[in-house]
Image (cartoon, rainbow over all chains, first blue to last red):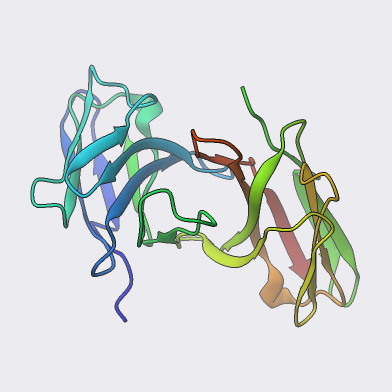
Length: 116
Length: 112
């Protein structure tokens, strides 16, 4: 079974530029998550989708971050414009059900963003 | 606000030593997971503990969930360089508003 796919793996941009990340979850997984992970820290949830609907985006900086999952499968996360503090790894994860019984999530390899 | 505190934050040991990582909270969790994350990769689930007092073993790794389901520990016996990585605990909060609460992680380096 293929895992969660993310692209690109690395991205370097200058501040005030825009950037987009793509995620394809495990086939059949209804729930998709985007996390921001600062180096050496735990992941911080940005947004959670159930199929193509948003379940939780309480920690998403909506003035600059946006995400969509139009067909309930793959998803894109966009930052516009980027700030220096957005430098982090952006992780995508998926789980097979909404409110999975034991919370298990399957992660992609992440996209490392550097904002100069 | 629910918090999961992990300790120690950093740990550097020699191959063959034993170690314990702790994950503590004042909140009750319906389940708790441990993940390991290697550089350049996403976290990978190691184990999920569900029942208070539960102990699970995965080769040289022993996981324990506290009786009150507020804390957990991970013990590694005879650590090897391949154990190097960031260990993260994540608790699924009890109740209707089910969210996964993440600890900040323990960065482990096992030196040959």
